[in-house]
Length: 180
Image 1 (cartoon, rainbow, N blue to C red):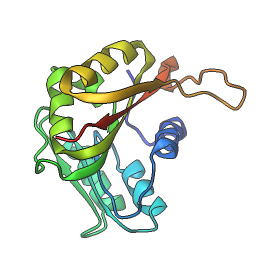
Image 2: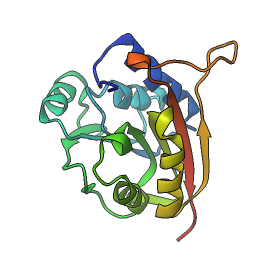
Image 3: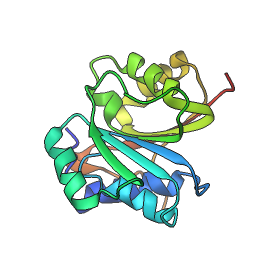
Image 4: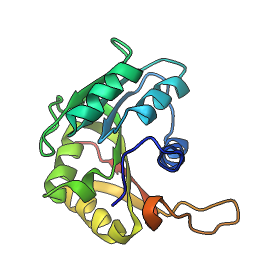
């Protein structure tokens, strides 16, 4: 199982995802399963402290740690969620970065629909999931209503697929929401 700790490997995976995210400056970003919040804070910093970042995790301990270490009032906010429903308004976010949330979900298809609901038209989802789930993730996203789903395997500088924590390979799935 891929952990959400603060290890250098976990941060390296977060950086790989953040490097894929197109930065538009004032975007509203949602992190689903944010762990200790390092990636959420890094995304905010990369935007030169503009925009708004909301990060949720099912673990109240992880959220407490994130609030203590990384919360920035009005800019980077952390909260818990139940793993099923994102307590956010429809179309609120420009981008969602999901960290192994679909793998952990008891109903990944429903979670994919929920992520679609909170994205604005033409919003983007970046999902970090184990490569072994790549086909299933792609299908969940397409069935939920996402389009342009692209699965990218992270590679090192020589083009060799990278390995994640505990030997699990990781994929990035990028989806663009059609206009509603």
